[in-house]
Length: 303
Image (tube, rainbow, N blue to C red; front, side, top):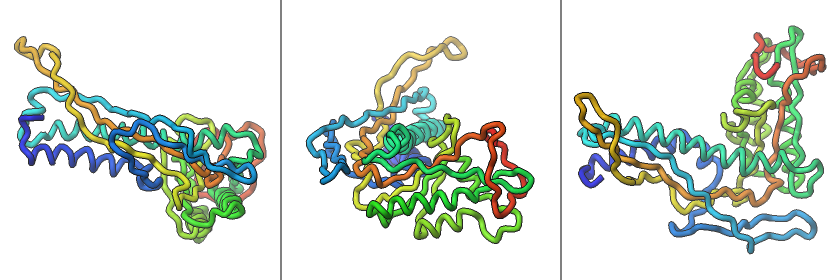
């Protein structure tokens, strides 16, 4: 906005940049590959594991242009401390960040693995998480320990021995931090040990509308997956439009804005990620008895 001082402009920019940094997981896990701001596409650089192996550095993929629109009233735009404007742009940043995580973890990584045929040369098979329960029938997180061990072993067998990260959907993350009755440690302690002390993250977009609960065990080093970024999130003023009639018959003006970015996720080495899946409970199906009890059951998707 031309009427804002440098201090106000910096305040406004800091509000949405800090919110994106706090709300988005993707940039904390997946390395960024910077592109020229004018870039509209990038080579896929995808590895085909079919012997003898080859990299497709010829095919191009278009960058995705994402935007989150928002508007400010004249009063909000002219407020000296921009208090309401900062709230509005922070909320837009939250929505943009959530959309980013969905496109990275769900669409670019999880979906191709889930849709691949079992035994595919280019993808790891999905690893099932056993539904372990205690004597009272309460679901425990013990099944995540052997599932993570199987995932790490699969990655190791393909040469992916470093950069382990676990990105878990909300329910599996909750199970990781639920102490079984009588257990000395939380399941996440054993899981972190299997990951060579790698981080464990919560990602609510991973399974927010799926019947099953899922997690990703990833080896993210050496550019195996990256986010090719031409334009990082930036606020752009678009135009002034006539708004609704305000009290007293005065027609307010709306300042239309958008948060804008342009990037694409490149899942280049597709065997560097294993999808873990805790299938939804089926009536009458037997569960595996766990070595320890969770003190209470956690109701979720039939569990």
